[in-house]
Amino acid sequence: MNTSAHISLGTLADMAEDRVAGAALRAALAHVSTCSACDDILRRLRHLILTMKGDRAPDVPRDVLLSAINIFSPSPSPLRRVVAILTFDSRSASPAFGMRSVHTASRQLLYSAQETDLDLRITVQNGECIVAGQIMRDGCSGGVVEISGANGSSEASLNELCEFTLPAVPVGNYSLMVRMLDVEIEIPELELKG
Image (cartoon, rainbow, N blue to C red):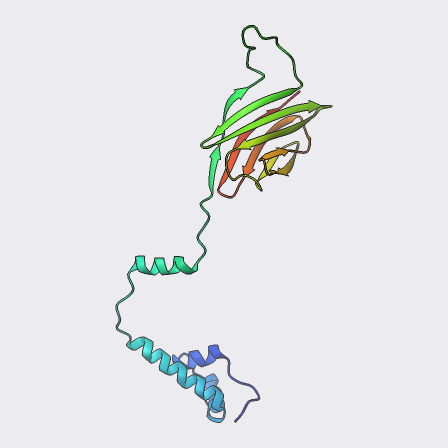
């Protein structure tokens, strides 16, 4: 038995399918004639190829095949992307009749995105804006809120009450993205100004 240098499985498969010729074939056949391990693999490959070529079984229906693949393949997450719509801005709200108007340093924005509401509080201090808020929906803890724009970006995680406070960013135009397991909620235009 010659065990010094066996023939690769790829070359043996090519030999079984008659895809090796010339000097390469003669060298491989010379090796196979003295190596029982390579000879055994070559015989098994030839038998397997003959069995496969002789198979006349009907093809599996496509939906059965896809069902079997889905059993063993992880299913893609049903992640959705939703654009939030502004429903309330405290800067443009007029005071209720009979109530005193109190000027606050914070601006409140309420957004709606399908089954989710976002309550944002924007506070401007020394030319920088701090955006804090709360996501109102079930199953949002562990999510991430990211704000990004030409003047900078920052992110924060949602706590167990779905609240967050982003690190301060300079005044400017931004987009805000809330990423949770099943949905990404986007506020594409968020103007932060003093």
